[in-house]
Length: 516
Image (cartoon, rainbow, N blue to C red; front, side, top):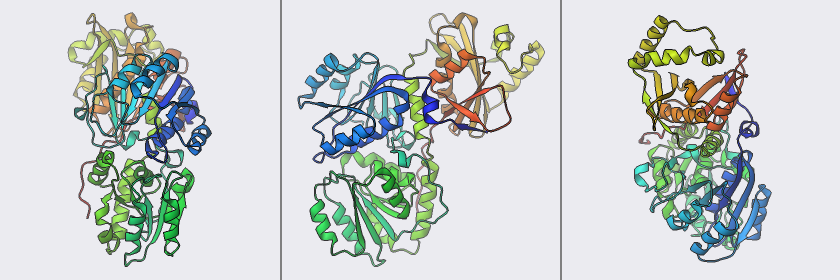
């Protein structure tokens, strides 16, 4: 058995010179984009030598929160975004930067301007309504596909769903509990700013229920209607107000509440990750439609319109436990590991080869590779392989539905460049790879590892983890795994004389289920 090493140690081998984050937020426009990037910045801190946050017109409290997270904050003047993009290229951005954008105004023209001045561009999106020039797109909603996007950057990738949703530190580890959720303790959290002021309306409706629940209403420092809400709450003995909670405080409160009414945003994911229960979704903005639809279809939440009927039903506790189980299966606490993998491998160039399935006609080439002295030296079994044994082994692998053998073929010359193979067992796949002597020393091993990993997880969607075993003396292979985004694992078994690397695959979106 292997377990992950600490985040800092796992990420120490590969560093991004500087991560630059760009989003706007304040009490007038809300804080969702900024908070999402702040969570991402905290998760990726071990990967970056420097972290810079660019923002316009922030409230002083927000600047303090960003700097408390270890970020350098640069306040930008209010100017038209085309001018801003040009100025960033001239004065701020560096060729080695990875820039992360979160906001609906950073459209294709803005992205295209800054993309040429940096190493990589990442865009957090929940609209998929205009072309993008980003190399990597993160969409927290599940069920989103490439067909819904127009991606103009060659090789651009989409990561969607809760498996890649940035969450604050208090919500990154799944909470172990055997307690059944209590639907009579209800959380109301419609975003820290709640610019449409729906908190009071929802709380009032819940307080009118005959089940007499205890309601906890949560708002942030940017909530502008606090005095009015506080005045009204004085006459509501079953209402408790909470303002500007830390992540740890909110996680603890969510854990106490077996039911919740949340906006279809990061806060709904935080509730699921904090322990979960009877979650009712109330979209308060157009950009929340995808998350709301995903949560309902995946059996993780119910629409707010059903809250009064469900909360007063004798089946409330059963439905709460059913939702909680589904939520735990999705929010597994491995988001940080997955994002570390993706941002590390983002630095790699496109591979100069393509992968194709191995056939019986490749037998002689594979045997020649296998028995090459340099390959045997770094194998756990150093003895040469007999031709008859090799033919028998290859025939068995080609007939095995749980085996995947891929040959890397150089795109320019057509020459065979290497092999990567996987043995799949349940939710785990173990890999082995090699490169032809003519293609070594070019940094291709990391590209082969990454390309093969992408293919095995696509072909075997049940695979949750991919493992690779390396001899400690094989420094080149260790470096290749690190560059590909793999994380070094700590063995808790009796195995020795090997370094084990792991890749955490994303949880496959659940199929729609009917709650009842």
